[in-house]
Length: 259
Image 1 (tube, rainbow, N blue to C red):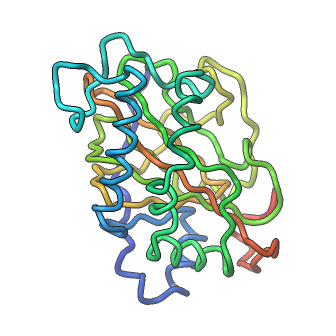
Image 2 (cartoon, rainbow, N blue to C red):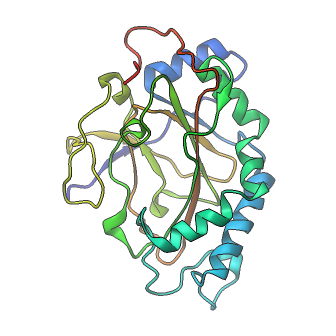
């Protein structure tokens, strides 16, 4: 396999005071990245809840503290249709700690600026738990709109629930890929349909800490980097937002159009 070419995400926290510039940047690049956008305490609360559930389900090794998030040997957790993960979701998604992070005021302000109006979060939120011993289920390049069909804008906020260096497999963005519209997704050598991407494509990804947030559009091609951090579980949350009133913002012609 050809090694991925990776450059750091461009941090955009300095644009928070100028929503018009922020939105223009998002429409041009297909993503925004903020360091320390939401309070770490809110992220840590959800992480503690998620790890407690993981422990109840027998996913955590007994030779380390629960907070370390070390997987039990042979866990092989990463498939979207794994019934173990589905059981986990039924318990974590309704939890108040999950809603508290999704509804953080700073996060909502960015989303509402991107959507140009009220945000609805019924497009499908997710809390991911991925172990390092299941490489075939590493999330391949894809677009959210391939799976979340509908009209108008779709923006996702992706947050690590814990320190997430590149070796732990964080989100990687293919900048400006949203300008190509909805792309064909092919069945290849991965368990899920993916967008074919050139071997020399430059992906953007960074070492992340709790409180960091990556926003990307429904047409932005993204993927997970390979998990190469041993037994540590990678925990993350995806919050998907659309316009609450169903309206579609008017943007420049070069930016995302409704699929």
